Length: 79
Image 1 (spheres, one colour):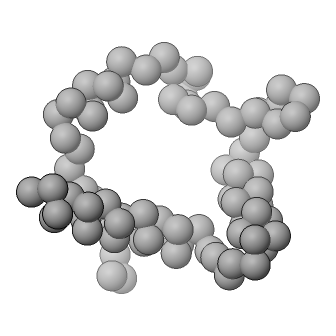
Image 2 (image 1 turned 90 degrees about the vertical axis):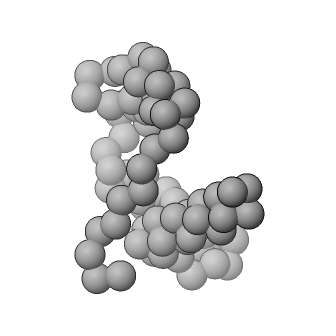
Image 3 (image 1 turned 135 degrees about the vertical axis):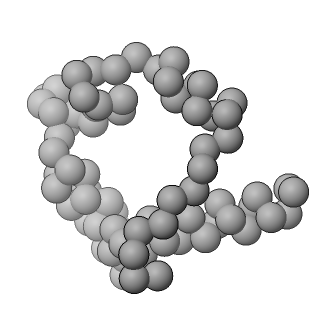
């Protein structure tokens, strides 16, 4: 799709996420080897680097689309 798409959260999942402890503005604060906070670019770089090491050509966009497609496929089977 050319535009962002949203998928509604299941109420149980929403409740579980809302109950998680927050660290400032982040629910999942990613930290580096020495405890420093990782930026979004740091996380993207690490994901791309791991994919590269595994011999997989991957972009963050493909990862997001693939995750959404997998979720839709699994939820269709469950429903």
